[in-house]
Amino acid sequence: MTEDLAGRLLVTLDLDGVTGKAALMDRTARALALPGWFGRNWDALADSLSDRTVWPRTADERGLLLVVRGWRAYAEANPDEWRTVREVFAEAADRTPTLTVALSLEGSPAPGRTSSLGGSS
Image (cartoon, rainbow, N blue to C red; front, top):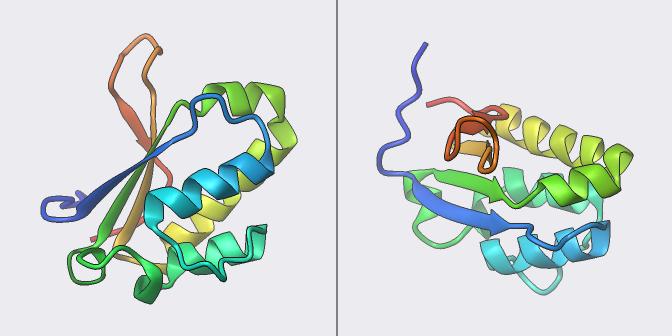
């Protein structure tokens, strides 16, 4: 099965320097321009990622490709929390066919490659 990501709105979630939940929530809210009432907890994050009505304007029609970069420091500093983040991303992508979340593998043996956490066309 191949996934056609052409035409989706690309949003980069830059987690460089982020090592905790509060900063992750703030960066995500900024990257996706989430409403002020975004709850900044795991359930609210999953709901917001799955709710196309709170996505950036053109993403509702086009679909959303969320590329997460700079995440390694978070994963190393807080592995249990990072596991939860990945579960939230994967669950949201599984629930929402027009959402794809990809982890950028920059700094790995194959720079620039990404690892998709889910989503379908």
